[in-house]
Image (cartoon, rainbow, N blue to C red; front, side):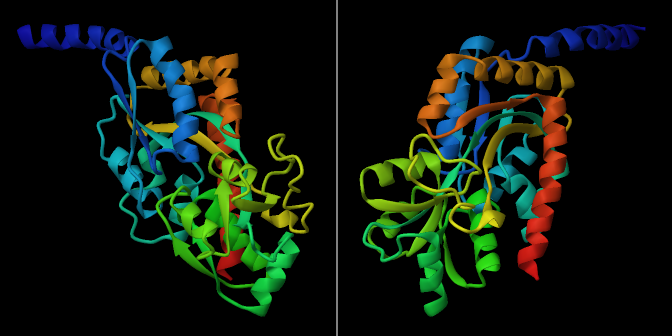
Length: 312
């Protein structure tokens, strides 16, 4: 009887305990280096989440292996709502491109999308290429030009592969742990091109250290309005836009997920967060749990078509 009573009391108290989430700091795992676009976009939101939910949201970078280190870490974390994975297209693309992964998408539950961001095709400031077509002509004349790849499965990496497939060229892709480490080798000419997220790209372009040939979004950026879209540059098939979101380990209580999703929506609705995201080169683009699931379904279908195209 005592055991039955104890179990009953626990069952009655469990929903209340979940509803109080969070009662301690929440760890937010970023799969790319500190200072990169994913880190900056994440902090723009988590600062507000900490205020609204009354607990610290501790952002921790775990870069490397094309985001697989971070994904594996969170896949093996307790499903209690206290470890979040900052997700992006790699969550879809890595399983399409790599074998032997030690994590699978089914190990994560979607929470909410919070931002979108364009990327820019950059070349050294002294590059003879003034347009995307100029650069493609160079690549055809000299196959396997060295380019920087900030991470397998990232939007930027996929866009580079698609550009090569559409244009009929081959690159020597050199891997880096995220976009920031690419910049020095691009500035000094060791690399001939890289597609870089806006947060990292824009300061380099405005300072004159690098030249932007195109914006991979479907519209020009107000921060670099003179840079054409990749469609305007002649390669509409390469139009891609990065998204950033939160996932948690599968099995995380639905009440915690719903509260976090609502908090993300409230945060991205504020002028404060919208301004920080805009300053980072992105835009608030909230999708709650249900809408985010639908978005992931359609985005997965899109990237599957991309993967098949450049694996032929």
